Image (cartoon, rainbow, N blue to C red):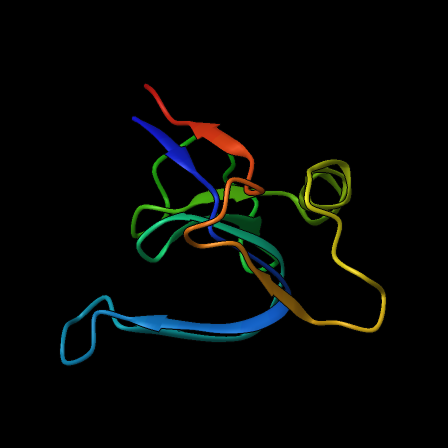
Length: 99
């Protein structure tokens, strides 16, 4: 689908699937761009199987690539801020996810 990003977070905690076998809790996930509900493009420091299904719906990328994407996209997150929310604003980038 085609989505507009609604948040950029430099470092944050991600968790989900509580009470299930695939429960996860990850701290300090860097370079995250949320684009649809809780789905995001973000760095994945916990695996190196990029290009294969290995997430709960997010787009996992290597940390250096995630940082480049994060810094390249608008709106720019000021150095003194950890997060910027653009929900309801036209400032968020467009993200096109397809197979």
